[in-house]
Length: 317
Image 1: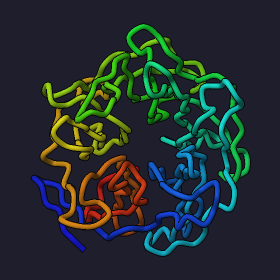
Image 2: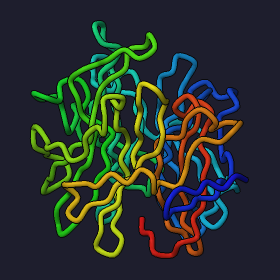
Image 3: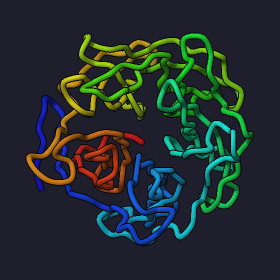
Image 4: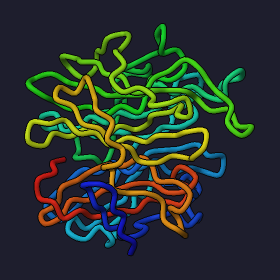
Protein backbone atom coordinates (compact mmCIF):
# COMPACT_ATOMS: atom_id res chain seq x y z
CA UNK A 1 0.00 0.00 0.00
CA UNK A 2 1.26 3.47 -0.91
CA UNK A 3 0.04 6.60 0.84
CA UNK A 4 -0.45 9.67 -1.34
CA UNK A 5 -0.43 12.96 0.56
CA UNK A 6 -1.07 16.30 -1.13
CA UNK A 7 -2.25 19.37 0.76
CA UNK A 8 -5.20 18.76 3.09
CA UNK A 9 -6.40 15.45 1.60
CA UNK A 10 -4.74 12.09 2.04
CA UNK A 11 -5.74 8.85 0.33
CA UNK A 12 -4.27 5.47 1.19
CA UNK A 13 -4.13 3.28 -1.88
CA UNK A 14 -5.47 -0.25 -1.36
CA UNK A 15 -4.54 -1.69 -4.74
CA UNK A 16 -6.29 -3.23 -7.70
CA UNK A 17 -9.81 -4.64 -7.26
CA UNK A 18 -10.59 -6.15 -10.65
CA UNK A 19 -9.24 -6.53 -14.17
CA UNK A 20 -10.68 -8.95 -16.76
CA UNK A 21 -8.58 -12.06 -17.35
CA UNK A 22 -9.44 -12.24 -21.06
CA UNK A 23 -11.57 -15.39 -20.82
CA UNK A 24 -14.97 -13.79 -21.53
CA UNK A 25 -15.44 -12.70 -25.19
CA UNK A 26 -17.58 -9.61 -24.51
CA UNK A 27 -15.46 -8.64 -21.49
CA UNK A 28 -11.89 -9.52 -22.42
CA UNK A 29 -10.24 -6.26 -21.36
CA UNK A 30 -10.77 -2.92 -19.61
CA UNK A 31 -13.04 -2.12 -16.64
CA UNK A 32 -13.85 1.61 -16.63
CA UNK A 33 -14.91 4.05 -15.27
CA UNK A 34 -15.84 2.68 -11.81
CA UNK A 35 -19.36 3.92 -10.99
CA UNK A 36 -20.49 2.81 -7.49
CA UNK A 37 -24.01 2.28 -6.17
CA UNK A 38 -24.99 0.66 -2.87
CA UNK A 39 -27.34 -2.25 -3.67
CA UNK A 40 -27.86 -3.29 -0.04
CA UNK A 41 -25.99 -2.86 3.24
CA UNK A 42 -23.39 -5.47 2.29
CA UNK A 43 -23.17 -5.17 -1.50
CA UNK A 44 -21.65 -2.28 -3.43
CA UNK A 45 -22.13 -2.54 -7.18
CA UNK A 46 -19.42 -1.01 -9.35
CA UNK A 47 -20.82 -0.41 -12.83
CA UNK A 48 -18.13 -0.45 -15.54
CA UNK A 49 -17.67 -0.93 -19.24
CA UNK A 50 -15.90 -4.12 -20.31
CA UNK A 51 -14.42 -4.31 -23.82
CA UNK A 52 -14.20 -7.10 -26.35
CA UNK A 53 -11.15 -7.81 -28.52
CA UNK A 54 -12.07 -4.87 -30.79
CA UNK A 55 -12.29 -2.46 -27.82
CA UNK A 56 -16.08 -2.22 -28.12
CA UNK A 57 -17.46 -1.61 -24.62
CA UNK A 58 -20.60 -3.01 -23.01
CA UNK A 59 -21.87 -2.20 -19.52
CA UNK A 60 -21.49 -4.78 -16.77
CA UNK A 61 -20.69 -4.70 -13.08
CA UNK A 62 -18.44 -5.95 -10.32
CA UNK A 63 -20.14 -6.43 -6.95
CA UNK A 64 -17.86 -5.96 -3.94
CA UNK A 65 -18.24 -6.11 -0.18
CA UNK A 66 -19.40 -2.64 0.86
CA UNK A 67 -17.22 -2.83 3.96
CA UNK A 68 -14.20 -4.38 2.24
CA UNK A 69 -14.08 -3.57 -1.50
CA UNK A 70 -11.14 -5.92 -2.04
CA UNK A 71 -13.63 -8.78 -1.69
CA UNK A 72 -15.31 -9.37 -5.05
CA UNK A 73 -18.74 -10.96 -4.60
CA UNK A 74 -19.90 -11.28 -8.20
CA UNK A 75 -19.14 -10.21 -11.77
CA UNK A 76 -21.89 -9.80 -14.37
CA UNK A 77 -22.09 -12.79 -16.70
CA UNK A 78 -23.70 -10.84 -19.54
CA UNK A 79 -24.02 -7.18 -20.51
CA UNK A 80 -26.66 -5.26 -18.58
CA UNK A 81 -26.62 -2.67 -21.37
CA UNK A 82 -25.44 -3.71 -24.83
CA UNK A 83 -24.34 -1.53 -27.75
CA UNK A 84 -26.92 0.28 -29.85
CA UNK A 85 -28.29 -0.72 -33.23
CA UNK A 86 -26.22 -0.08 -36.39
CA UNK A 87 -26.09 3.61 -37.20
CA UNK A 88 -27.03 4.74 -33.70
CA UNK A 89 -24.86 7.05 -31.61
CA UNK A 90 -23.86 4.15 -29.32
CA UNK A 91 -23.23 1.47 -31.95
CA UNK A 92 -19.54 1.12 -31.08
CA UNK A 93 -19.58 1.18 -27.29
CA UNK A 94 -21.45 2.15 -24.13
CA UNK A 95 -19.76 3.38 -20.95
CA UNK A 96 -21.55 4.21 -17.65
CA UNK A 97 -20.71 7.52 -15.97
CA UNK A 98 -23.47 7.95 -13.36
CA UNK A 99 -26.21 5.76 -11.87
CA UNK A 100 -28.84 7.81 -10.04
CA UNK A 101 -31.75 6.48 -7.93
CA UNK A 102 -34.99 8.22 -8.97
CA UNK A 103 -37.93 6.88 -6.97
CA UNK A 104 -37.91 3.10 -7.39
CA UNK A 105 -35.92 3.26 -10.61
CA UNK A 106 -32.27 3.68 -11.50
CA UNK A 107 -31.21 6.16 -14.17
CA UNK A 108 -27.94 5.24 -15.88
CA UNK A 109 -26.33 8.03 -17.85
CA UNK A 110 -23.83 6.57 -20.26
CA UNK A 111 -21.39 7.49 -23.03
CA UNK A 112 -22.24 6.28 -26.51
CA UNK A 113 -19.36 5.84 -28.97
CA UNK A 114 -19.57 6.14 -32.73
CA UNK A 115 -16.55 5.82 -35.01
CA UNK A 116 -15.76 8.81 -37.25
CA UNK A 117 -13.69 9.34 -40.36
CA UNK A 118 -12.23 12.84 -40.12
CA UNK A 119 -12.14 12.53 -36.33
CA UNK A 120 -11.52 9.21 -34.57
CA UNK A 121 -14.87 9.03 -32.79
CA UNK A 122 -17.87 10.93 -31.45
CA UNK A 123 -19.21 10.76 -27.88
CA UNK A 124 -22.70 11.71 -26.77
CA UNK A 125 -24.65 10.90 -23.61
CA UNK A 126 -27.50 8.41 -23.45
CA UNK A 127 -29.89 7.36 -20.70
CA UNK A 128 -31.07 3.87 -19.75
CA UNK A 129 -33.40 2.97 -16.87
CA UNK A 130 -33.56 -0.10 -14.62
CA UNK A 131 -36.73 -1.31 -12.91
CA UNK A 132 -35.09 -4.37 -11.32
CA UNK A 133 -32.49 -2.82 -9.04
CA UNK A 134 -29.67 -2.59 -11.56
CA UNK A 135 -29.64 -6.08 -13.08
CA UNK A 136 -30.86 -4.90 -16.49
CA UNK A 137 -31.31 -1.52 -18.17
CA UNK A 138 -33.45 -0.34 -21.08
CA UNK A 139 -32.81 2.75 -23.18
CA UNK A 140 -35.17 5.66 -22.75
CA UNK A 141 -34.61 6.49 -26.42
CA UNK A 142 -32.25 5.55 -29.23
CA UNK A 143 -30.90 9.09 -29.56
CA UNK A 144 -28.70 10.87 -27.03
CA UNK A 145 -30.37 12.80 -24.22
CA UNK A 146 -27.69 15.44 -24.77
CA UNK A 147 -26.89 15.59 -28.47
CA UNK A 148 -24.52 17.76 -30.48
CA UNK A 149 -25.03 21.51 -30.65
CA UNK A 150 -23.05 24.58 -31.68
CA UNK A 151 -19.94 24.71 -29.53
CA UNK A 152 -20.47 21.08 -28.48
CA UNK A 153 -20.38 19.43 -31.88
CA UNK A 154 -18.08 16.42 -31.38
CA UNK A 155 -18.25 15.52 -27.69
CA UNK A 156 -21.14 16.11 -25.28
CA UNK A 157 -20.81 13.36 -22.75
CA UNK A 158 -19.38 11.85 -19.50
CA UNK A 159 -22.24 13.21 -17.41
CA UNK A 160 -22.64 13.25 -13.65
CA UNK A 161 -26.21 14.01 -12.56
CA UNK A 162 -27.46 15.13 -9.15
CA UNK A 163 -31.11 15.45 -8.13
CA UNK A 164 -31.35 18.59 -6.02
CA UNK A 165 -34.42 20.56 -4.88
CA UNK A 166 -36.59 18.75 -7.40
CA UNK A 167 -34.33 19.51 -10.36
CA UNK A 168 -31.75 17.44 -12.17
CA UNK A 169 -28.33 19.07 -12.41
CA UNK A 170 -25.79 17.73 -14.90
CA UNK A 171 -22.06 18.33 -15.08
CA UNK A 172 -20.59 16.97 -18.28
CA UNK A 173 -17.73 17.36 -20.76
CA UNK A 174 -18.09 18.96 -24.19
CA UNK A 175 -16.10 20.28 -27.10
CA UNK A 176 -15.90 20.66 -30.87
CA UNK A 177 -12.19 20.36 -31.60
CA UNK A 178 -9.37 17.84 -31.64
CA UNK A 179 -5.63 18.25 -31.10
CA UNK A 180 -2.53 16.14 -31.74
CA UNK A 181 -0.33 15.13 -28.81
CA UNK A 182 2.85 13.12 -29.47
CA UNK A 183 1.46 12.05 -32.82
CA UNK A 184 -1.93 10.93 -31.43
CA UNK A 185 -5.21 12.67 -32.21
CA UNK A 186 -7.13 13.54 -29.02
CA UNK A 187 -10.39 15.43 -28.33
CA UNK A 188 -10.49 18.80 -26.57
CA UNK A 189 -13.22 19.21 -23.93
CA UNK A 190 -13.87 21.12 -20.73
CA UNK A 191 -16.65 20.90 -18.12
CA UNK A 192 -20.17 22.29 -18.66
CA UNK A 193 -23.40 22.52 -16.63
CA UNK A 194 -27.12 22.28 -17.49
CA UNK A 195 -30.39 21.61 -15.63
CA UNK A 196 -33.53 19.59 -16.38
CA UNK A 197 -36.97 19.14 -14.87
CA UNK A 198 -37.20 15.39 -15.57
CA UNK A 199 -33.64 14.17 -16.22
CA UNK A 200 -34.55 13.23 -19.80
CA UNK A 201 -35.10 16.51 -21.67
CA UNK A 202 -32.07 18.80 -21.44
CA UNK A 203 -31.13 22.19 -22.95
CA UNK A 204 -29.30 22.21 -26.26
CA UNK A 205 -26.14 23.80 -24.89
CA UNK A 206 -24.59 24.28 -21.48
CA UNK A 207 -22.39 26.89 -19.85
CA UNK A 208 -18.70 26.33 -19.20
CA UNK A 209 -18.19 25.90 -15.46
CA UNK A 210 -14.59 24.64 -15.30
CA UNK A 211 -12.05 25.55 -17.97
CA UNK A 212 -8.42 24.74 -18.70
CA UNK A 213 -5.84 26.13 -16.32
CA UNK A 214 -3.16 26.63 -19.00
CA UNK A 215 -2.27 25.86 -22.63
CA UNK A 216 -0.82 22.48 -21.71
CA UNK A 217 -4.21 21.18 -20.53
CA UNK A 218 -6.66 20.05 -23.21
CA UNK A 219 -9.15 17.66 -21.58
CA UNK A 220 -11.19 17.74 -18.37
CA UNK A 221 -13.01 14.42 -18.06
CA UNK A 222 -15.47 12.36 -15.96
CA UNK A 223 -16.70 14.71 -13.23
CA UNK A 224 -17.88 13.34 -9.87
CA UNK A 225 -19.75 15.90 -7.76
CA UNK A 226 -20.91 15.84 -4.12
CA UNK A 227 -21.78 18.35 -1.40
CA UNK A 228 -20.13 18.67 1.98
CA UNK A 229 -21.24 21.22 4.56
CA UNK A 230 -22.91 23.32 1.86
CA UNK A 231 -19.88 23.31 -0.45
CA UNK A 232 -19.94 21.59 -3.85
CA UNK A 233 -16.86 19.48 -4.45
CA UNK A 234 -15.74 17.81 -7.65
CA UNK A 235 -13.13 15.29 -8.67
CA UNK A 236 -12.34 15.15 -12.38
CA UNK A 237 -9.65 13.90 -14.76
CA UNK A 238 -7.15 16.31 -16.27
CA UNK A 239 -5.10 15.46 -19.36
CA UNK A 240 -2.24 17.63 -20.56
CA UNK A 241 0.22 17.47 -23.41
CA UNK A 242 3.05 16.81 -20.95
CA UNK A 243 1.27 14.21 -18.76
CA UNK A 244 -1.37 11.56 -19.17
CA UNK A 245 -4.50 11.75 -17.01
CA UNK A 246 -4.24 12.91 -13.41
CA UNK A 247 -7.06 13.42 -10.89
CA UNK A 248 -8.01 17.05 -10.28
CA UNK A 249 -10.16 18.66 -7.62
CA UNK A 250 -12.20 21.87 -7.24
CA UNK A 251 -14.78 23.49 -4.96
CA UNK A 252 -17.77 25.76 -5.54
CA UNK A 253 -20.47 27.62 -3.64
CA UNK A 254 -23.12 27.04 -6.30
CA UNK A 255 -21.82 24.28 -8.61
CA UNK A 256 -21.37 26.82 -11.40
CA UNK A 257 -18.18 28.70 -10.59
CA UNK A 258 -15.36 26.46 -9.43
CA UNK A 259 -12.07 27.11 -7.62
CA UNK A 260 -9.30 24.84 -8.91
CA UNK A 261 -7.57 23.14 -5.95
CA UNK A 262 -5.75 20.32 -7.68
CA UNK A 263 -3.07 20.31 -5.00
CA UNK A 264 -5.73 19.07 -2.57
CA UNK A 265 -6.75 16.03 -4.66
CA UNK A 266 -4.51 13.86 -2.52
CA UNK A 267 -3.70 11.10 -5.02
CA UNK A 268 -1.17 10.65 -7.82
CA UNK A 269 0.46 7.87 -9.82
CA UNK A 270 2.41 5.12 -8.06
CA UNK A 271 6.10 4.48 -8.65
CA UNK A 272 5.38 1.11 -10.24
CA UNK A 273 2.45 -1.09 -11.12
CA UNK A 274 -1.00 -0.85 -12.65
CA UNK A 275 -1.44 2.88 -11.87
CA UNK A 276 2.13 4.10 -12.40
CA UNK A 277 1.46 6.02 -15.63
CA UNK A 278 -1.93 7.59 -15.01
CA UNK A 279 -4.79 7.88 -12.52
CA UNK A 280 -8.23 8.85 -13.77
CA UNK A 281 -12.04 8.61 -13.60
CA UNK A 282 -12.36 8.94 -9.83
CA UNK A 283 -15.64 8.28 -8.02
CA UNK A 284 -16.39 8.73 -4.33
CA UNK A 285 -18.47 6.56 -2.01
CA UNK A 286 -18.93 6.94 1.75
CA UNK A 287 -18.99 3.60 3.57
CA UNK A 288 -19.95 2.90 7.16
CA UNK A 289 -16.46 3.51 8.48
CA UNK A 290 -14.39 4.85 5.59
CA UNK A 291 -14.72 6.90 2.44
CA UNK A 292 -13.61 5.18 -0.76
CA UNK A 293 -12.21 6.59 -3.96
CA UNK A 294 -12.50 4.20 -6.89
CA UNK A 295 -10.34 4.99 -9.92
CA UNK A 296 -8.65 3.65 -13.05
CA UNK A 297 -4.97 3.36 -13.73
CA UNK A 298 -2.84 2.93 -16.83
CA UNK A 299 -4.23 2.99 -20.36
CA UNK A 300 -7.59 4.51 -19.34
CA UNK A 301 -8.77 1.40 -17.52
CA UNK A 302 -7.15 -1.42 -19.48
CA UNK A 303 -5.38 -2.40 -16.26
CA UNK A 304 -8.69 -2.46 -14.37
CA UNK A 305 -9.82 -0.40 -11.40
CA UNK A 306 -8.75 -0.10 -7.80
CA UNK A 307 -9.46 2.04 -4.78
CA UNK A 308 -8.08 4.18 -2.01
CA UNK A 309 -9.48 5.02 1.41
CA UNK A 310 -9.71 8.29 3.31
CA UNK A 311 -10.50 8.27 7.00
CA UNK A 312 -12.62 11.40 7.01
CA UNK A 313 -16.25 10.95 8.12
CA UNK A 314 -17.78 14.03 6.51
CA UNK A 315 -17.44 13.26 2.79
CA UNK A 316 -20.77 12.41 1.21
CA UNK A 317 -21.67 10.39 -1.86
